[in-house]
Image 1 (cartoon, one colour):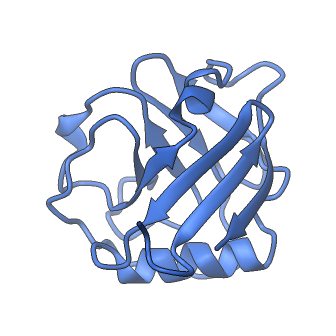
Image 2 (tube, helix red, strand yellow):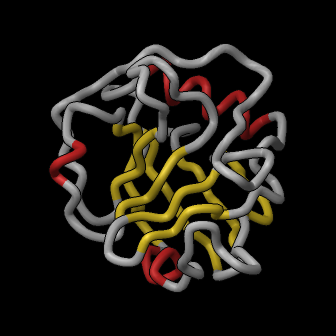
Length: 151
């Protein structure tokens, strides 16, 4: 059971997705995500890049994968947590310290990402809803996060 304040619920167009946030793995990233959730940053944001068998990416305010929040990027907190089904990890550009607001949920094992992207959580409920998210790069008529809340 996650400790209080570290449960993130994404109410998506496919149903709820509950994520256990892991400040023990990535304290800076979890704090950053919490700040964005509290400001309702993720409400209405689409899943703009969804690759079958790989991952569903969200968190771009433009819906294109080109944007972030108004805050500075977050320094990498690479850890030994494996990129396996249900893991939530930060998207970034080539610079390891370029993560900001975009993150992805892994559909299947993607161990080639291990220690190169910051894992900060894992889906503990609703992975069947993640599986239903429309695929594409870019996605036509994409699914979205209706609201994101902490508990």
